[in-house]
Image 1: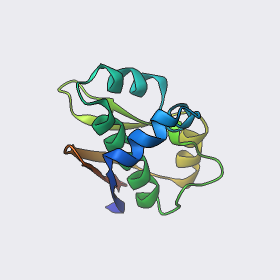
Image 2: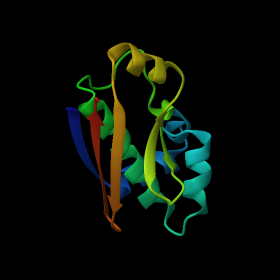
Image 3: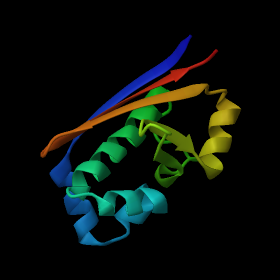
Length: 125
């Protein structure tokens, strides 16, 4: 049974500008392994933006918006065996999701030069 669906779209330039300001935005929003991954890419800001959209879409799918006991950098895009993107919850955010009874999380990402989008679906069995 589908518990929630969230979608987000963002301009790559907005994320790039926030990161370039250097005021801790990148570390507040992204986990260290996401930063390492994005920085290896030819167009890193497209990848940062897609991950930002995934985090926003997750909170929409969870039906909460950004909640007190959660952190953006604890909602992490990782890659499965075949390169498929997966959302991994860590720390307080993982505990919050367990308390809330959230099920399996599915994510899809897409990006172009100027826009990035993500959709998240939470499925309870």
